[in-house]
Length: 166
Image 1 (cartoon, one colour):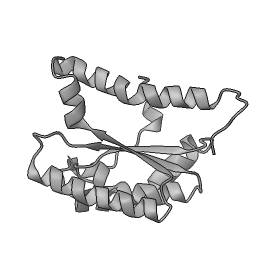
Image 2 (tube, helix red, strand yellow; image 1 turned 180 degrees about the vertical axis):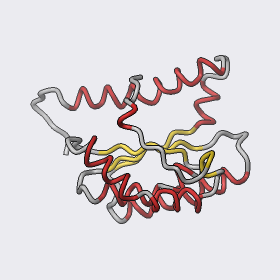
Image 3 (cartoon, one colour; image 1 turned 120 degrees about the vertical axis):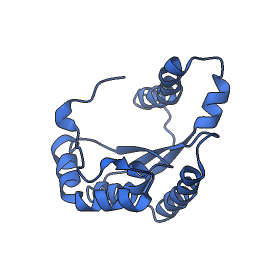
C-alpha cells in the first residue's frame, strides 16, 4: 500500500466530522466543492486511462458524494470503475439503508453506461474468511485480498499475447 501525497488530498471543509451517515449532507458537500474536485482530477489524474472510484456504500461522505464524483469523472470521458464496500453484519440500520439506496444508484449508473465496471466487496464475507485474524491485521489482509487480484489482472492483461479477450 502506497501513501498518498498530501498534495493529492482534498479536505472538503463542509462538516466538522464527515457527513454523519447522511447521504444528503455528503451530496451537499460534494456539490458545494464540485469545482475543487474537478480541479484536483485535472491536476493530478489527467494522465489516467481509467478512474477507479472506491467508496463505502453505507456512510454519508462516500456514498453521499457518489453521484457528484461520477459526474466530475464523467466530464473527462474516461471509463469509470467503482469499488463499493458493503457494510458488515453488525453495522446499524442507517448504514444498511444507505447501502440499499447506494446500490440502487450504482445499478442505475451502470444501466446508463456512466460506469464501465463495478466491484462489490462484502465486509461480512471478508470477516468470516479471516475470523481468526486480529482486528489490527484484518485491514492489511482484507486490502491484499481485494487489491492483489486486481493488480494481477492488470499485469496479465498488459502482457503480449496471441489472443485477446473481446
